[in-house]
Image (cartoon, rainbow, N blue to C red; front, side):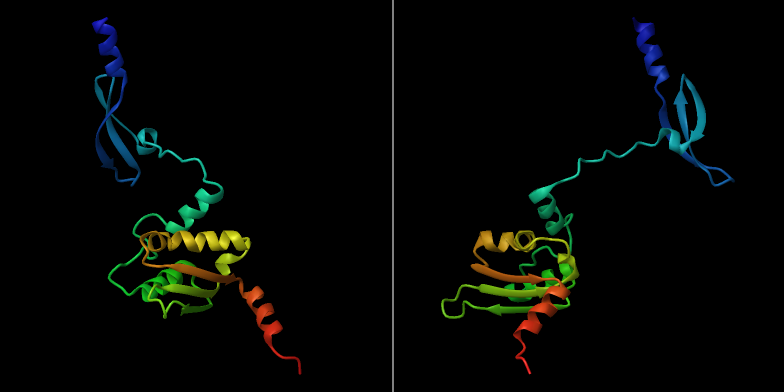
Amino acid sequence: QQQQQQQQQDDKATVVGDVEHETKQATKEVVANGSFQTVPAAAVAIQPTVAAPLSGLEAQRAAANGSGGESWAPDLSLPLEEDVERRLRARYAPTYLEMENQGNSCGALKLAIVMVSEAFRGQSRINRQREVQSILKSDLDSGRLHALSMMLKTPEEHQKFIAKQEPAS
């Protein structure tokens, strides 16, 4: 049994160093079956695991929240309105962004957002709102932001909206 265990250990290749030859081909030195061998790096490379794709709300939250350290993460050192504008511009690169504090009389920040962005193309109205809300979730949960109303459009939708508002000549 000891011999069998030793054979199993010998059969496992152990990487002991990276080598770059004159041919510039990446290789690794490995110990296999008790002897040193140089093999192509791809032969011993560890393949990254691929997570199952997210769907529905999980995908929206992941897209909105980024992967940590994103420029749309909250910055509590900034005034809230400035921080929200910074995050929305970083995440959506809007062609038009208007924000209005509608809570002046009671002191709580109630924010109305009108934003036009290519990022909304192909998304339903509810999915656009969910995505923006997920970016501002920490502010809403903490009470830093009391209420939020949004009009989120693609550039074409915004042009149609503006055309309807203009008086007929």
